[in-house]
Length: 221
Ligand SMILES: [Mn+2]
Image 1 (tube, rainbow, N blue to C red):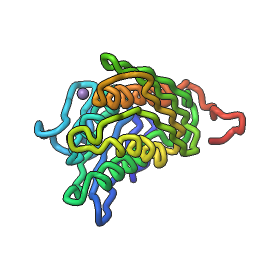
Image 2 (image 1 turned 120 degrees about the horizontal axis):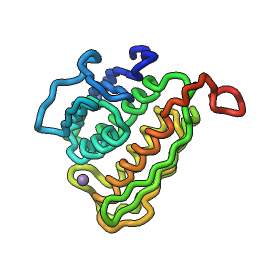
Image 3 (image 1 turned 90 degrees about the horizontal axis):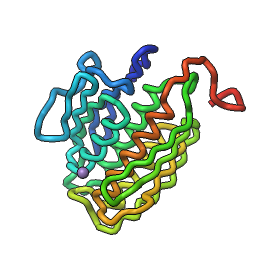
Image 4 (image 1 turned 120 degrees about the vertical axis):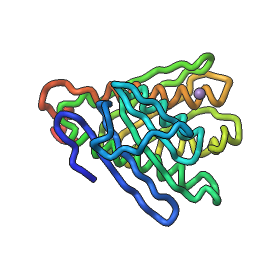
C-alpha cells in the first residue's frame, strides 16, 4: 500500500487470494484517479465521472456495484474497484473481500486520526425508506447493523451479505459503525438508503478540523 499524501488522502491496494483478486484506488477527496492507476472506464458496470469525482466499480455483482457506487458518490470519494472473484461458487467471498479491501484502503487513506472530526452521523431517505448511520473513527472495529431486509437476495447479492459487507468494511477500516434502517418497505430502497446514510456519516467523521489535535481524551486513537 502507498503512504497517504498530506494534501489528498489516497490509497491504492491489491488484494489477491485463491478466492478473489481485487484492485482498488481510492481518494477520499475526489478528483482524478489516473495518477493512482485507477481502472479505465467501462460503461458495462457502475461508472460515473465528473470533474469532482471518478467512480468505476466492477465487483462482478451488479447490486454490490450499485451500493459501493452510492457509498463513494455521497462520501465525496473517487473510487476504482475491480474484482475477479469465485462467483461460480456464490457471492460470499467476492462481497466480503471487496468490503474488507475497501476498509483497508479507507484506513490507509485517512492515515493517523489527527485533526479529524472523528464522529459522524448520517440520515438518508430513499422514498419510503429511511436509514441512520453513526460512525466513530475509533480504531476499534465494531459494527451493529440492522437493515430489516425481507428478501432472499437483491439482484445477484444475497441479502444476508449486505450487513456482512458493512461489518467487513468497518473491521478493516478500524471504525465503530451503527447502521439502522428506521423504516421502509422496499428492500432495494432500504439497502440503498443505508449505504447513503453511511456515506454521509463517513463524510462528516473524516472532515478535517484544521487543527493537529488527536480527538480523544486518551490522547491517542
Ligand atoms: Mn437504486
